[in-house]
Image 1 (tube, rainbow, N blue to C red):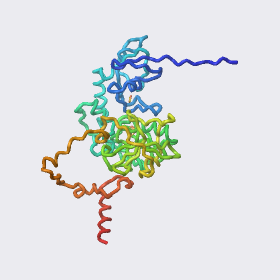
Image 2: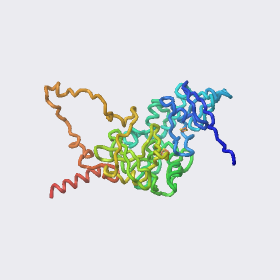
Image 3: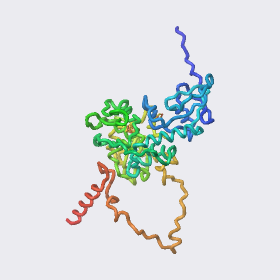
Image 4: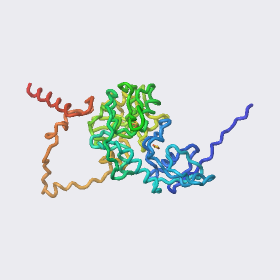
Length: 383
Ligand code: SF4
Ligand code: FES
């Protein structure tokens, strides 16, 4: 009888990042090892995305300094390396936030990424959950040395569900890998090269595969956004809740972004790195277009409870259940009189009409939608 060959697990490798040591399996990258440590040590990553094969190596935001190559060869690496693409060696020593070279390089990369960026956060649906916004706050500098006109692109229509704002794109390729690896047919990609490179379909085409909505979740910036959520709300006014439904196409496990009882947006569930989480079966929790775009009624879902939001995130604002609120003192100082509202926003603004159910509006919530409702109401009142 053939002898059973037992494979021994390869020995772990010790890597030290910013003076904190961690033991990892061979094949682990510096970024993954840093994520095991967590906190400020972890380099930012704009193009690497764990569930996508081949991602990383494009944006250079994850640069780190290797001050000791390994136990066997302790020479430092002469240049900064992309931590998402560099594997650890036993005895390696890495500097992330403790290296002035790294901090300077990151600030330079942020400046580069923002060269042509429109900086339109006040009207961008991604504001509040944008990785480029976080990156520039945490690692960027105040000013820019760029004096030229920013790039603009011809507008491409990607169909009824996905809005493309090419001027916000940082060419991370995540959406291209997603379309390649998650859908059975990719219709978009990066066209042209260098300064002209852009995300587009070759011949004006809509992206309509059943799983194509996932490109919205992987996009780190506001280049690809959900048309069914456009301009309906700022993300920090919504309450994310975990929910699920029986779906025959996908895992059906989602985050509902609610305002009151209205479901304004549905996304896949994401972890602390902004990557789509695995399901209990160990598969990536990609969701289908039907769950994402068509199921906007609370009755469609089984609500599990509030989504855990990182404490520093603007989305978590006002959502702490155990928060000690300051005492309401207005009535006290006004001799028992309740404060009188000087301005009722619903009377002033057409776009704050509480009778309009935002979750039922197909397209973006523009003034036209509200004016139309107003006209219908006026007609009904006259009849
Ligand atoms: S559209 Fe978004 S996901 Fe696609 S390459 Fe640009 S930034 Fe990356
Ligand atoms: S995350 Fe490493 S190069 Fe982009």
